[in-house]
Length: 381
Ligand SMILES: C[S@@+](CC[C@H](N)C(=O)[O-])C[C@H]1O[C@@H](n2cnc3c(N)ncnc32)[C@H](O)[C@@H]1O
Picture (cartoon, rainbow, N blue to C red):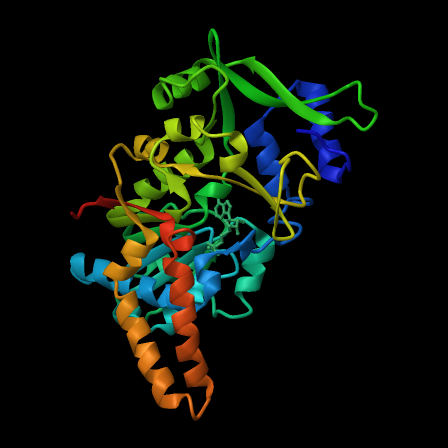
């Protein structure tokens, strides 16, 4: 970990280290992504989209949202068709998934209150360019009335309890985490320090003895880790998931992300495989380089989320979820429409052809199709 080209955030972090000593990785990551002036998602407005070779599922095209709309309808039915039926989307970015869900005209539309939660004010402002956004109180406070769909936008999770669904696509991999390393005498924390011998105040990796909570996390989630193994302690994701689950009076919490089942699996792999940094759609090696100009992500460890919720999620792959909710049927319809309209070559024909390509990307077992979908239910089976 070193940084040859100091950014304004780099100076800020170096000053904090001078004042407080080596910083938790989570502090540095949170600044790098969300610092109000210089953060990747806030200042640069690093909207989701491409990460290396991948594009997020909603950004592939409208098919993903069309299938999610069917999944929402199915939960609405299971809940007994409540009105309002509140869907809270965490990390909604510019609102691409919301647009696609609404465009699919779900059956639950008249009861639907769709609340986008996005931390970045820059991205929240961009939601307004393609969505009519109501006051949050209208989405969350007015029961009944069959006047949906209503869309609202917030900077953080609401506090009112809901009947409905909380969902997040590729949010948790972006939430700040700490790094723990197994040492001969227990666990240490990998902090971020400054190499005071370097003229440009290079940031470096600095081991400190783990505090009680960090040691407890290491022992709980990676009890058999070998000396030298490093694991992420995903406190940001755990806090978010606990808050999201607590929101539900009745309904489902649905997380779609690149995830693994256990933290221990990550401890058996090189850090660079699960802690990834992307700049300009390319992988870069060092998360501490040019802070604020790159996206920093981590494979999400499902066992840490289960611990935060208090029980285990039902786990499927994204391909399985999309198949259960009819992606093959939508693609077959697309093929038929394309065959019928290819000669006309109009917008409907192009959309139909695009659906087939979108499905290939969304179902690819080596890519988006292999993502995990974690589902916890509350007040329903
Ligand atoms: C990788 S992007 C995914 C965007 C979108 N869900 C998609 O799949 O295209 C992650 C988004 O989560 C947002 N975010 C990060 N922390 C958040 C939080 N605590 N609450 C709401 N949004 C957050 C970021 O600003 C960013 O827009």
